[in-house]
Image 1 (cartoon, helix red, strand yellow):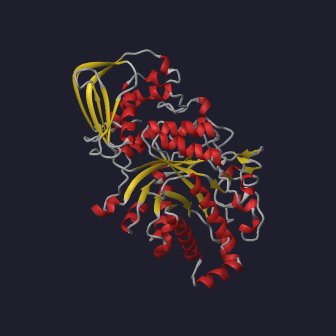
Image 2 (cartoon, rainbow, N blue to C red):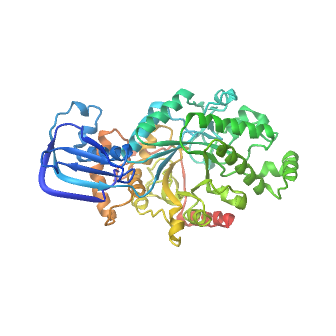
Image 3 (cartoon, rainbow, N blue to C red):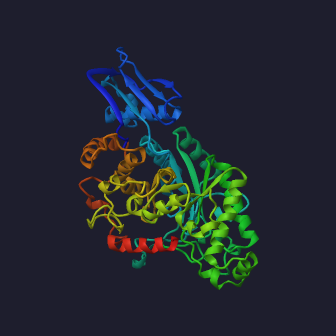
Length: 506
């Protein structure tokens, strides 16, 4: 939802707005993403948006759109005739966090370019400024790399797709895949930039690489594999040969050439060490490097990739598993803290910049209720109210440590989201609540009841925008996926798993 402005001054008068063409002013004394929206305060009915930068004025315009009738957001909105009556008022607002992100997984299920652009447009309307684009995984590869053409010939397709949770062992017996051309991704980056969203590409390594190994078996550890068809974590990971390191650098170079932002994601998560333990070549490599165990090798690899990105002025962005590298973890790596609340605190206390995206409050693939019609229910229940209650900065941090929490991010993993409509259903309206968490709640900390009252109004805007959101009353009969059964989890099971994660880090 477009966040509730933190400061509103409103009188009893109204102004009639006939079209969306406010006077735009840049005032560098304002916060860069802050704005002041004046509607008729000059006594002549003028609408002015003053921003600390172009981004600030953009957000001011999104707030102005919220004040107009929802029907103006329809594709035919330009045909509707004003004037529209808006109370005379002045709104002053600015965000709490500099990183207001959404992660979208396009590896498990490929999202065609027009749908991806629409996803970005909706995110911008809700004042998000970062798209973390998960481009590669065991089940598919979406990034073209000129030196490695089989990535978009072999690695981008799987022969069939698992239906539902792993333990049901059911499949849809038809191929799935696709990839974005270089021109496509340049268009994505430019489209997003116009809406003041930075795209952060992620190429997950050295685990979650089975698709790449299917295309180039020499990257693996001696086992020829296909692109992974089931969900879960593959045991097939990259070897650590010089050729494989060059492959990884080539892939990062390709991402660097397309996406202009500061950060490039290198993943680093869920890398199983089974093959490394069994590989004489890996064991010899560890001895050559003077590394005592596979975890140290993992940390060394992260350092190699971070160094490469640093060589052309970029910073690595990785999941919180890379904190297990200890002193080998480069100090300038940005951490995505996902395994519960504690990794955010641990990363900040160790001096790392960190983005809070804990699964318990930010994973939008988790089921939304206990209703049996929820499609492919996995994880614990995560309601709109649960998302809205999220506090990204953990208790117990010093003032300096709190500053290390540079932002928040909602994560959309698409194992069970086969289409853009299903992504809509799982993301909205929970992403509306997350938008307020990311932007910062009103000065007087609006209550859940207040938020839900505003959300009910906001749903008309989602209707006008054509969003297939989940109704607040619960799933419709046709939302169910009896062909793709899930595996719900209890909160107790999740807490136990988080405890193990923390033990790994500490």
